[in-house]
Image (tube, rainbow, N blue to C red; front, side):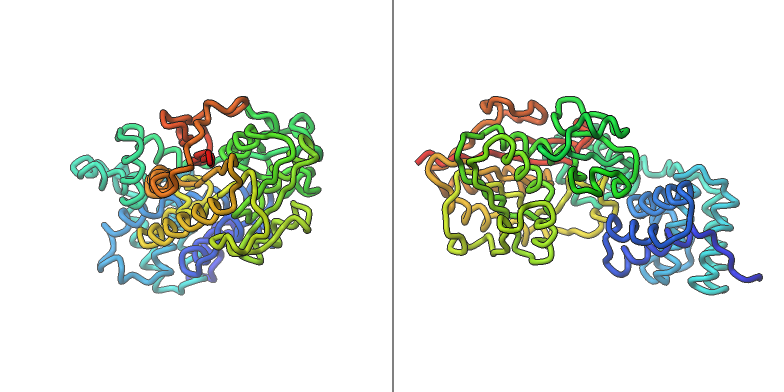
Length: 442
C-alpha cells in the first residue's frame, strides 16, 4: 500500500470528531480554530463543516449501522476505528459523496491516523455498509422510542422528555428531524450600535417580527458588524426572551442579569436599555470568571461582576427586574450544538435542577416588591421548566406568574395557556427556549 494521502477536508473532520468525542472539545469553538489554521478553500471548508457537524449529530445512527458489520461487541472496538467508521458511514448514507469515494477517502485518513491494519478493517466494514440497505427497514418492528432514537440519533431519555411536553409522536418526530438540520446563524443588531437595516444592506436577511434580528448566510466572524462588536450572534429564541422581558419596562428600574455568560442576552439588554431608558441601572453577573471576561467584552466593565448567584448576600442591592437565564441541559439547542445530545445525562439533569432552584430562591431575596423576574432555560424538559416554576410558586406565596400575553409589546410565539412561553425548533425555527415571568405581589 502506498503512502497515506488523505484529503485535508476529511482529515480535519476526523480531527474534530476525535477532539470532541474523545477529548471533550466543543465543536462550535474548536472547528473555527481548525479551519482558520487550514489552507483549504471556502468550498472545502463548507464540506468539512457539513461532514463533521453531520457526523456528530448522526453518530448514534451510524454506530447502529456499524455494529451490524463488526466482528466483536461495538464497545470493544478501538476508538479510532469507531470515529473513522462514523465518518465513512455519514458520507455513504447522508451526503452526496459517491460510495467508492466515501470508502476510499476514509481509508486514506485511517492509514494516516490508525495504521495499515486498522485501515484494512475500516475498509472491510465500509464496503459492507456501502452495499447494504441503509434505510433500515427493520426499525419499523421496534417500539417507537427505540426506533426514533436510532433513526434520528437522539438518546432515548431526551426523546421521552420531548414527548412529555408535545404529547404527540408525529410532532416529536418533526422536532427530532429539525434538530438534525444544519442552520444558518441568527444575529442581533445591538440598539444604538447598528440596525437590522444596516445588516440587511450588508447581505443579511431580516427575521419577520423581530426589530433587531437577521439571519446570516456567511461565517459570522467574517461579518464586519460582528468583528466591530456592534452586533452579536444570537438565536432568535434568545432575542425573543430579551424582547419579552424588556416589554415589562418602566423607567428608572434596576436590572440584573443573574447568569450572564457568555454575554449574548446581557449585551442585547445593556444596549437596549441605554437607548430606551438612560435612567435604568444594569448589572451583569457571571460566576465563572473566564465567562465574566467574555461578558466584559460586550458590556461596560464596571457593570459586570463575578459572584455566586445562589447566595443573595453576595449582592449589595435589590433589583426591580432579574433575568435568570439558568444553566440547564441545553436540550433546546441540539441543532446548533451537534455534540450536546451525547454530553448530558439524567445525573446532570438532577444537579442542574438543584442549581436552578437555588438561583430562583436567591433571586427571590433580591427582588423588590412589585418586581418581576424572568426564569429562562434553553431546555423544554419539564423538570427544568414548568416543574421548577410550580415548585417555586408553592414555596413563595407572594409570587405569581405574570402571563406573557398580558405584557404589551411581547411576542405571541410559543405562549402557553399558563402564561409561560415554550418555543419549539420545528415550529418557530428557533432554539426550544422556555420563559416564565414571575411577579412579587407583596
